[in-house]
Length: 211
Image (cartoon, rainbow, N blue to C red; front, side, top):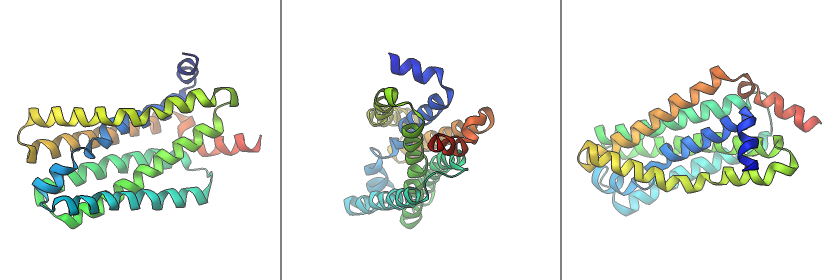
């Protein structure tokens, strides 16, 4: 409970963790739905699904390596916000374009962007928390952050239930995934306008490191 209280009383930490939780719940819902996209919509089978997931992984790895080399910079808060926005929009674009056009190559490009944008916000949030959280609270806060991975299956359940309510798998699944992506983009814009510390996160991090 002490960790929860600490996060609740520090709005920057609360916002960063809420972004991560929200994105994991609504954004990663596309992963358990990938067999529907690969087999029923894009019609590329298990091999094609593997390539789709692989391109997302390559995008994530590429962004991680670049961010790791750049360190902290003044626009890190904007990287988190816009990374989240592009993450949501690219997921929605992948889902809706696959449903509408069934273009495998467009899906590959969009999933690569999904991977890049997801790493932009996730790595930036994780490193920011590790730098700013005091030593005696770091384990509690990072443990709470680690719950992100437990939320992902719940997102798949949400997408499955919503798609069943919408209609057939070939239309219900893409629409459910796209709704999640749009919600992510809308949710991410809020901190940009509402919290100055999030916008100036890079400067705050540089100050912490200097001290």
